[in-house]
Image 1 (spheres, rainbow, N blue to C red):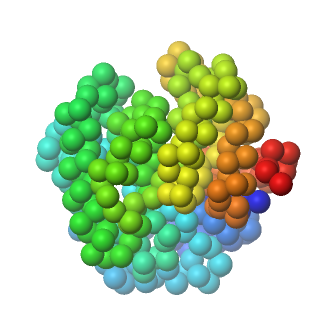
Image 2 (cartoon, rainbow, N blue to C red; image 1 turned 60 degrees about the vertical axis):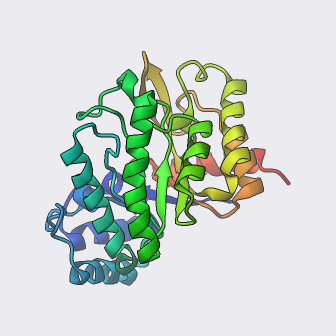
Image 3 (cartoon, rainbow, N blue to C red; image 1 turned 45 degrees about the vertical axis):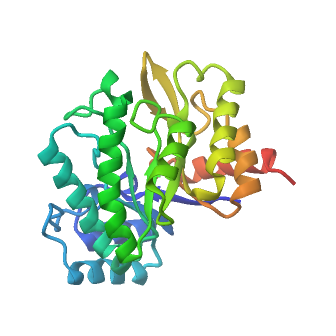
Length: 286
C-alpha cells in the first residue's frame, strides 16, 4: 500500500501557522510536504530569519495535530548561472537543513534546476559545465547535511539538470553520500516522446528502480498532459501517465512508502487517493 499525503499549499490557502495547520487537521491529512514560504503568512522565510524557536514552534504545532512532514520543501535552482544567486539559494537550503529535525521533517527536498536565472528551458541545462555547477551546489549542501545528520531529497525532471534515470544514477555516485535519497516523481521523468507510449514509460520507470530503487524514499503522485514540450498537470487518471510499472516496482521495492499528491485539491484528494489505491491493488506484485 501507499501512505498518501498532500502538499500543504495545495490543501489550504496561505495563512498563519495555526490557521493552516488547523485546516490540514480538519481534512484528516497526516503526511504533508511543507514549503513554509508558500504556506505561512506570519513567517519570514528569507535567509537568516529561521531560528531554533521557530523550528520548535512549528514542530510542536504539527505534533499537536498529528501531522508529519515527509518533505520540507526548499525548491531552489542549484543550476543558476548567476553565482551570487546560486550560492544564496544554497545558503537558504542549508538553513532548512539546520532546522529540519526541530520541525520533524524526514528530509529537505528540491529539484535540480535549469541553467537559466529565470528557470527557462535552455539547451545549456544538459551541458557538462552545468552538471558540474549543480554538483558543486550539492557538495556544499552535502557537507552541511552530513554534519547535521539530515537527509536531502533530490528529484529528477525531464527538462532539468538530472533529466533521466542515468543522470540521477551518475549524480548519486558523484555525490557519494548516505544523506542523499531520491524523491521519485514518475510523471516528471516522462518525456514528450514517451508520453504516448506505455512501453517507453514503463522502461523509464523500470530503469529508475533498477539503478537506484534502494535510494527512493518518497513519491510524488500526479498526472499530466503535454502541450507542446510543456507538461500541464492533471488529476490521476486524467493524463498520459501509465501507473502499471510504477505500482509494480513500488510494491516490490517500497511497500508503505509515502506518496504525496501534487496539484490535488481538497475536494478531489480522497477520490485521487482511491484511484491510486485501485491502481496499486491492480498492478502490485503478489
